[in-house]
Length: 295
Image 1 (cartoon, rainbow, N blue to C red):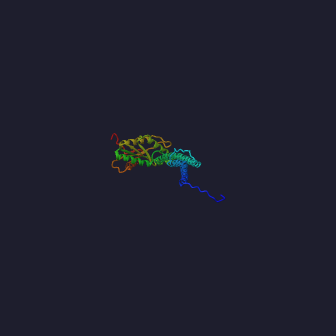
Image 2 (cartoon, helix red, strand yellow; image 1 turned 120 degrees about the vertical axis):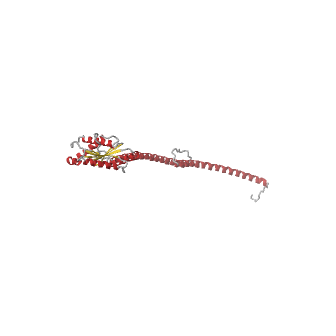
Image 3 (tube, helix red, strand yellow; image 1 turned 60 degrees about the vertical axis):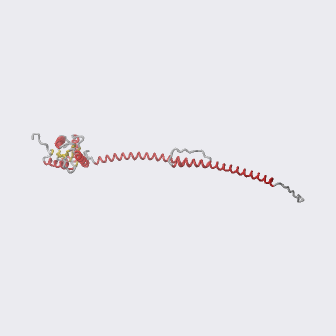
């Protein structure tokens, strides 16, 4: 007041403190409620971020394990998470496309490899056959003859299955080449090879071992029957006309494999010695000769 007076009102302390404490209680309650509301807001916001991230993490792990039935959940709260999910889905689609393309490429490559392998095997078979076939006559060559001799010798040692080796030589073949030319000589070789094949069994083996020389192997055959087969072959060749030569003859040496033979080539060597005797005895004959029925 202008007079500088003051009014002093005395109140009990308990009355004044009661109002202050009431205000403190209100403040504490309001602060607690505000804290709880704040925590709920933080929890809700965290869930909106962490749960989608957990789902994306699980999807990423499934992709890492190579699973293909991955389904992307598009329910994301924020635009950033939706973009992240979309990018992850695009990456998964690209990886699956690349995997499918790689698998298709592998299938094509495997098919090509299988085709090339089959073709290579076929060519190797043809090459192996060519390496063992006489190009002029079409019968096996010396390499195949040696292999067959070893096979027959192994069977003989294992099961005592006899076989006979015939060595044949066309008589006066050089004269044929000198008189009619090598082209005619080739025709003679082809015709002789054809005649030998046509007069042998399916299990018999005939080959050209060099020049005008042929070898015949007769499995499951003893010497006497082998000599008769040799005579049959000699007669078949001599009775076949070959233009312009006319007829040709062959000399034949015959030998049966023996238990004391030290190698597969021994019977062939012995048959070759018999051929040498047939040549020097006048040609167009078989050695050894069977005894005459009247003898």
